[in-house]
Each structure stands twice: as C-alpha cells, then as structure tokens.
Image 1 (cartoon, rainbow, N blue to C red):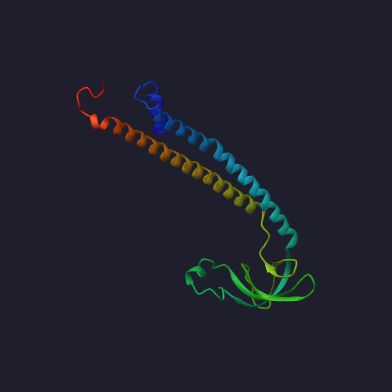
Image 2: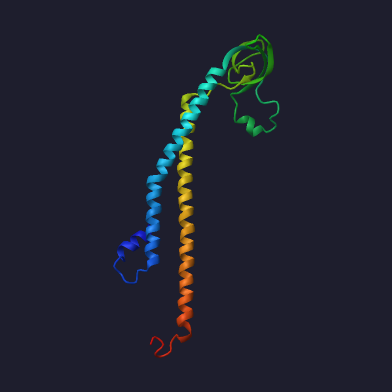
Length: 200
C-alpha cells in the first residue's frame, strides 16, 4: 500500500525509478487480486464443498436408521480413556454396553455412546448402518452448511496466502535485479569516483 501511495505522489518525479513503478504496480495488482479474486475462490470452494456435503448427508440419511437397543451396563466415561481431563470435557456422555437387532434380524452387541440417561435393562434409540453396526447420526443440513462455510474461508485464505507469497517472490527478484544494476553501475564509475573530469 505504501508503494502505491508513493507512486502516486512521485509519479512525475524524475527520481522515481522504473523498479519503483514496477513495485507499486505489483502491490496494486496483489491488492486487487486479494480483494476481488480471493472472495470468488472462497465462494466457489464453499459452493463445491456444500454440494458434496449435502450429497453425503443425504446418503447418510438413506443408509442409517434408528433402532431400539437394550442397555446391559452403563459407564460414565470411556473404558480406554485414562486422561481425566479429556473425560471431564464430556460429562454428559455415557458409554453403554447394549444389544439390538439389525435389519436382517441378527443380534448385535457393542459399546455405544449416548447422551441419554440410560439405566441397565432400559431400551433406548441408537443409529445403525445398513449392516446393523452402531454408527453416528446422519449429518444435518445445518452442519453441512457450517462445514462448507469453513471450507470457503479456508479456500479464500489459502488464495490470499498464495498471492502474497507470489508477490514476495516477485519482489525478491526485483530487488535482486536492482542490486545487480547497482553493482554494475558502481563497477563502471567506482574507480573514477571523486576524480576531476571523471564524468567527461
């Protein structure tokens, strides 16, 4: 931004070098890309992710079903969780050993996680897949939209980061070229520096 302002102030100044103008135009182009292109990329990424997530959510709704399960034993924390801090993060979840009948009539038994207040011998609802294996509830449309928005933000931020990286690399090349020009000019006039009539 400073380069753009500087170019505008010194656009008619004979001391304004060609490299200064290039740097200013580069900064202006990067800013325009960040303001215009990055939101478009974010929107396209969010749209693509939203469509894919909605399709996945629909497949989950069609392939998952709620069935009645019978609780055999109840524990307030995971059997394999030895970290008291992580278990305290989910105080409302219970791990229930239960059995239920699958779609084919076969009995399944496993440990499931539920927020319901279940006692041994009580029936409660769980989600299963087509094979009768316990699984999580299908993804909702609201969850899909939230994930899509996050994907769009990530795509936009990634685009801005890529543009900034490209600008910095180009600036490095411009600076290297400027230093080479300075070295060449100093090699030409350096030996005669301060001598009378060296410019003749």
